[in-house]
View (cartoon, rainbow, N blue to C red):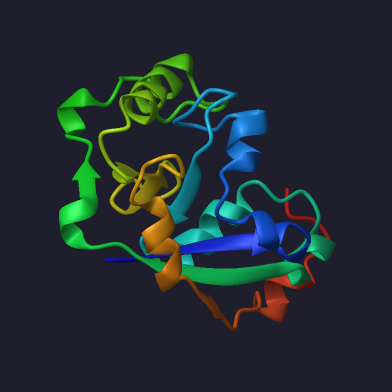
Amino acid sequence: MIFYRLVTHRYASEAWTGSGANLFGGRWNHKGHPAVYVASSISLAALEMLVHVHSDTVLTQYGLFSIEIPDNDIEYLDKQWLPPDWQENPAPLSTMDLGTAWLEANSGVALVLPSCVVPLENNAMLNPQHPTFSQLLKTVKALPFSFDARLVNQTTLR
């Protein structure tokens, strides 16, 4: 399965380290636990990025990457295990606890999770500390990408 990741050019060299999630945490991980978030489509990656952008000027500063993960290396979170508050903003401790437990177990390299932005679509959390993660990096490709000018030229995004 191919997943996609949008990253600011400034941090492109760190795109696969999990350092951002390690420093700040994320919906599915606590601070201090590296994780790499990816989306199942380019459009979902763009939407996931847009909900966090506060200025249209930064929309010109993103690069797109893809990574291919073999189907047998992908785990799926059963929807029955979703905490009732999983879509709350800011991200609740319940989702961070769930994802951090998966990272700490080091049982897999990719965990597919529902998107809060488009709940019928999926994101995945990758575990950069899993022994097979470095092999997956051989499949990473930089892809051409730019946000549509109609998004970039908005006077306010929020």
